[in-house]
Length: 502
Image (cartoon, rainbow, N blue to C red):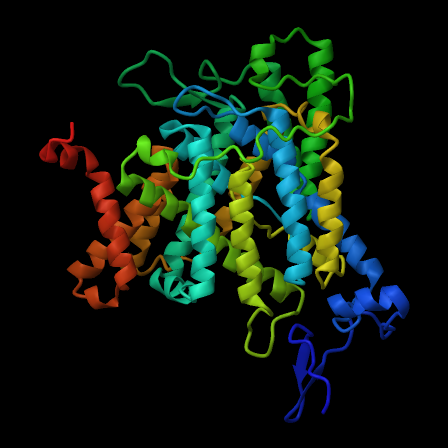
């Protein structure tokens, strides 16, 4: 009996048969022998038309294009405070972020055998910082993320992921990504001081340019230079554009802070000063600091359900898009366009969310930047082992990450906002029954500084419009139930008054 081919091997159709597609290299890869041969066979490196050199280069490329998360995640989480005014430690956040990324990327490499790296998700960490934490303590917020990850695992195991995927219209899913993009960009502008709230004014516009209606001060100049550098590198399709921008802008900030008389408060939480030591032992103080059910003591059950659903929705569908996109780019989809070992991959991604919450690093998820490694030739999970190993090395370089001021990291948030905004072109704007809910989803997120509010506005509007048009049967029952929960969420104050809760 002939050996069954690897389902992830790129194939091409011939007359009635499927044969392996030719390697991207003009030379047919030769299967190594011995220990290297065992590794090659386990990861199907030669079978997928790759070699160890390409996998290693791909692993490095992926790391350097997503290493910015070691800076951005501590900036986003560290700049927020919980209900009791507590902040998370920057060095501890760097350690937690690097640890989760290292472990889960290696697990994905071995278990999923895809060149797919995982780390704290942008957008998801914004939910944790600006939506969850203000309502409860940090351990309570991270407990909700653990619950969200466990629910993803349950959905994968039970096969309910297909039902959820089909319940939400594609345009509404894209609108969620776009809204999160604008929300993240807005956070970047605010954190850098480019946009500020007008103090002591009533009846005026709520925000303004700079601190006094115009740009002033060296820190804001650093941010502007960072934005220009980032967009220039992105426009040139430079690999590692975001990381390069952060490094260069940080260097400029360090130089300016050294020669100019700048008050430390002008930089915000992080002053760009060279640390005494570049290498330090990792601080694992945040690992395991979470509470599964503490959130219920601070907010109602309905609010907890909606917050968890917001996390689950963003995480679950972003992962689906990323996994399919990376696999397509690598030519690993089978004849039916399916991702190899998809259930296993999604289960690992759900476990990454659990690990991120348990480590107080926010929910970890698959990164679309993994396509950078694919572009360098990576086709297997061996590249993920390389990427994970580099994140492990980063555990000991915490002082380097903690000198990056918000003004050097915020341009990356603006860039990520642009990337997510690109999804807007796929929304069916000519169909008002989907365009209006999509618009409300996109607009309400940044305007109310809440991802939950944006998703809720979109869902409720979609259900109401469908019902008014006599198309109620087109709405999946899961969407009806979710919209009902959001309606209660928006009306929670009068509902509580009617019930005499307060």
